[in-house]
Image 1 (cartoon, helix red, strand yellow):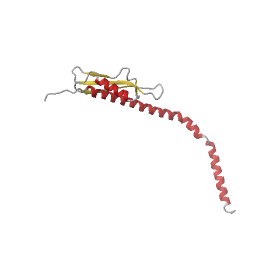
Image 2 (spheres, helix red, strand yellow):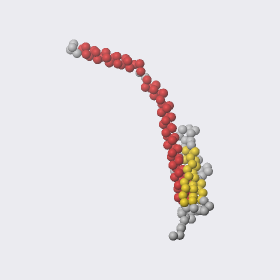
Image 3 (cartoon, rainbow, N blue to C red):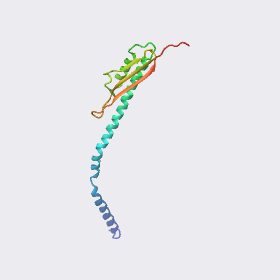
Image 4 (cartoon, rainbow, N blue to C red):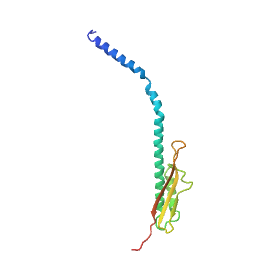
Length: 149
């Protein structure tokens, strides 16, 4: 063994021991920090998913209302064409909008038969138990008619 290299090796071992000994004071701190932060992380995660569910419910309701308006505004459309189309859309759209069938979609034509308005109401899907939001979307359009040149 080379005696000239021994002191450098010995100094490196002593320095490493000191570094590891100093780190022992914080040993196990990471699991504690994670345990403290995990509820906040979970609240943010489920909160963001709930916000996305609300936006999907709003989008579903608006698309159903627009679909109802498009069906009802056709010239000589039947009285329930808009409601039937909106109902069909909501049945095929999935469960993002819940409770839409209780009042059901509503389409109203003005007295002069020139404009139609469809409204869809419901509640957003609840990701967080006990938390859901009311959703109401309305679409509006003019009824097609033949005009004289």
